[in-house]
Image 1 (cartoon, one colour):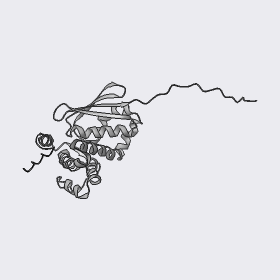
Image 2 (cartoon, helix red, strand yellow; image 1 turned 60 degrees about the horizontal axis):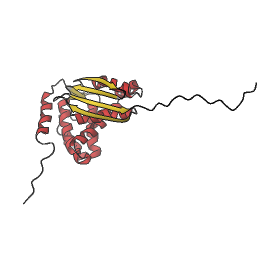
Image 3 (cartoon, one colour; image 1 turned 90 degrees about the horizontal axis):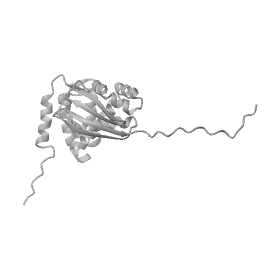
Image 4 (cartoon, rainbow, N blue to C red; image 1 turned 135 degrees about the horizontal axis):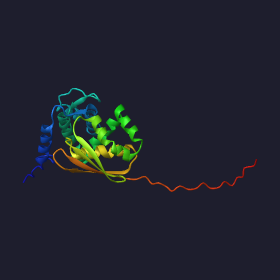
Length: 223
């Protein structure tokens, strides 16, 4: 008897989830072109140029300019197809989204605005997390974001009305923490509603060695 083909893991309710996200987006909801370019770069390095052409075919734009604004509905279409193509390479749809989020962060931080964002953090992970809401405002036109501190190296980052699934932002947040030198950053997303998610962000505080009084020199100073 012939074995039945297993349904694609994105089928059914997951496909419907993406469709509803797209329907919730308006023409005023936009994202920077650098994120589109980041997705295409992930596909290019992971699958190849033919797959890039497949991704481009689902959008209306012929090309993307890094700091121009484009409809987030197009970004959702692009990301969904890209994650499907990258799933075999990364062992699953969610991990493909995380890798795309990491690449999106690298693309953003290579821009002039992204470099300024890093400079404001000054290598301080806590300062970077505090500035995340304003960082997202530089990148997209939609949503509200807030930070609730639970302790040193422990925060809840809440996103309201954001269109991408949690796995994507897990990659974004983990990569940006890595870029400022946070030790063992961990990000766990939890869905609160269709477009609302919270992210538990933790990292290890740097080890602060106790100050040691300088030893008295054996050399004497002669006048």
